[in-house]
Structure formats: C-alpha cells, structure tokens
Amino acid sequence: MKNNVCFVMMYILTGFIDLYIIIKYMQFFLGKLKVSRKAAIYTFTFCYLLCTIQYIKMPVPVLNAVVSFVQLYLMARCYEKKKNKIVLAVIMVFMFEFVCELMVSFVTGGGNLKLTVNGYYAESYQLVSLSILQIILYFIITSFKNINSGLQLPVTFNIAIIILNLLFLVMEMLLFMQDDIPRNIKMVSVVCITFMIILIMYLYDVVSRSYVNMIQAQLFERENMYYTKQAEVLQKNNDNIRKFRHDINNHLYVLETMLDEEANNTKVKEYIAKLVGQLNKVSMYSSSGNIQLDSIVNYKLSEAREKNIEVTSDVTLPNACHIDMNDMVTILGNIIDNSIEAVEKLDKGRYIDLKIKYQMGTILIDLKNSYDGHIKLKDGTIKTLKRNSIEHGIGLKSVEEAVEKYDGAVKIDYDNNEFRVKIVLYIDEQK
Image 1 (cartoon, helix red, strand yellow):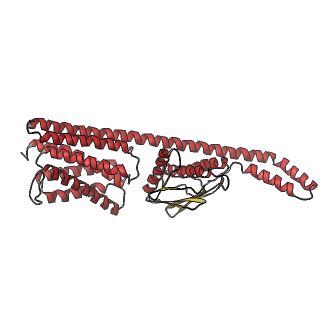
Image 2 (tube, one colour):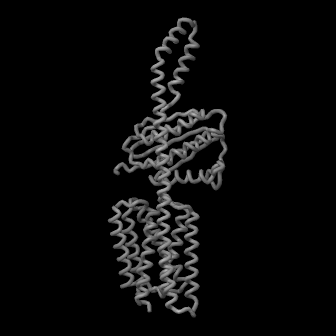
Image 3 (cartoon, helix red, strand yellow):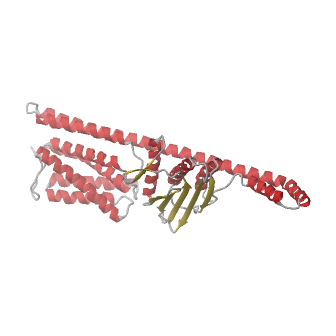
C-alpha cells in the first residue's frame, strides 16, 4: 500500500507545491536572482528531480535530510546575496520544513522514525497536509516583515490565504478520520484539494504581479511628475535670469543716481538686497548632474521654500551611480515630506537642511529640520502624529524597505528643537 502508484503520483504532485514554497522563501530572504531566469529554471528542475527520485527510490530519513539540504543550498546559490546570508537562509528554510514534518508526524502518527531505514509516510493525505502546513507557515512568516524589502501584498491577503489553507487542512483531517467513507473517495478529495491549492498559489502570484506592477506604475508616474516640476524650476530660473539681464542697465542707472543723491548708502544696500532676492527667487538646491536626483530634490525643496521654510542643501552624487532611482525617489520623497509637515507646525525657526554625499561606494543622506519637540513613542519606536497614519506607515515602510535593499541603515536623532534623519546606502560599484 505504501509503495503504490497513487502514493508516488501524490508525492510528485505535492512536490511541485513544496518547490514553489521553497522558491518563495528564497525570494523572501535572498531577493533577486544573480543568474539568468533560464539557468534558475534548470537548477530548480534538477533539484526537484533529485529530491523526488531519491525519496521514491531510497526514502531513508537521514538521506532525505541530506538531499533536502543540498537542494536548498543549490537553489540559494542562484541568488545574489553574500555566502553567509545564503547559508543562513538555507538553514532557516530547512528548519521550517523540519518543523512542519514533525508536526504532521505528531498529529497523524505517520512517518518513519527510524533514521536509517526505508519508509514512506503512511497515507497520501499526509503529504497534502504537509504541503498545506508549509504554505501556512510561509504566509505567517512573510506577514511580519519583508526581509528582502520587495513589494508584497497587504497582510490581510496573507491572512485570507492562511485561513483558507487551514480550512483545507481541517476538512482533509476530518475526512480521513471517518471510517465509513470509501478510500477512493478520500483519494479523490486529496487530489482535488491539491489542485485547489496549486490554483490558489497561481492566483496569488497573478495578484502579486498585478499589485507590484500597479505600485511601480505609481512610482513611475511620481518620477515623471518630479521631472516635469524640475523642468518648470529650470524654466523659471531661465526666465528670471533673462528678465534680470534685460533690466540690469536700468538697475545700474538707478544705483548710480542713488549714489549721487544719498549721503549714506542705506537705501542702496536695500535696493541691492531686493535685486538679489529677485535673482534667487527660484533656487536650484541640487545641481549634481544626476537628473533624477536633482528632480526630486529641487521639486521637494522648492515646495518647502514656497511655504516660507528656510532651505539649505549640499548634494553631490555621480551620474553613474548604481542605485535604482525609484528607491531614491521613495526615500527622499518620504523623508522630505515628513520634514516639511513637521516644520509647517512652527511659527518661527522654520528650516530644513539636506546633505547627500557619495564616498567610496556609500551614499550618505543627512536631513535636519526644526520641529515643535513633540514625539510620540510606542515600544521605543517613533509613531506618527498625522491624521492619516495608514498612509504615513506605508511611506515609512517603503523607506525602510528601500534602505534594506542596499544593506543600509537609518538612524534618527532628535532633541527639543531639531529632528535629524541619517541614512546610509551601500552601493555595489561592480555592477
């Protein structure tokens, strides 16, 4: 009974689900592939066949564990993280699978407890139960924190998947506990539930891709808006300079007359100050030559200046900087927006100071602003005072995810008058 064709076919089928979960874990912990998609598919297929053939031919627990660990390591090597992170991810995924197997064995009484003796799980439904349990554990883990910092669906979606798989698990357990139900009916239910799980995972991927595409489209639209605003800023500067040049002769004539008529030069100084003010009415806060960076910085800081906030900046970033500018838009857009909103609450002493520097593969972002000294803390974490706390939370999470993508760090300092955010991003110069 243990070695019948039905059991083998069920193992092959559930093996696809297990492979899917492993790939999702790898994406979660390790991020993007460092090999081509074609090479990754070859590697994953080889690993799947290796484990499947080994388990069908020689299902020895010790050998199962060794082959499973090798499978995980080979798959993890397809990703771009450093070796120590790859090993850590492999160990974690291996332990997750091991815990699931122990739970299924404990609840159902199946499995082979003799580590060096051949032995399958007692029933096909236990293979399905194991796959369902692994899916549930994956969605529970990924609901807490996206280590890889890639975009993901809202937590409520993960909860819905968890509940649905729990219902599948309970239904299957209850079905196999009934002795009066024919075995062929039970096997049909196992096959049906397995295909339903595969369908749900497929739909999850479709929805995930749609969600990611939607977010990326929003980022692209936001970046285009920054470029448009940058063009407007440049045009205003050009118009202002052309107008000033056109009128410079008249201004010089007025200055000459005032110098002749005035014994002291107080009015002359006031007039000159007025001219300087006109010339600097539209300022360029970033002229690094990196168009994308200049766009976001000039747009945001010009917005601050229009709200009567004193703005100072020092921005240097090379053109050929290996960083996704969507991430820079996310980081700078959110932290500058937060600074502006904090400064707007003040009647005086309103300022923002931004510094961005590039040194030996490292981007340093230092943003300081005045604020009213009110900080809301919960469990040692700064919480927003904004009315729209959900939107603020999404913004901060986006910043954290973008920073983590570059193995960076965010440090926040503050006193009663000044709030300061320091961000470090480590760039791979060899890309």
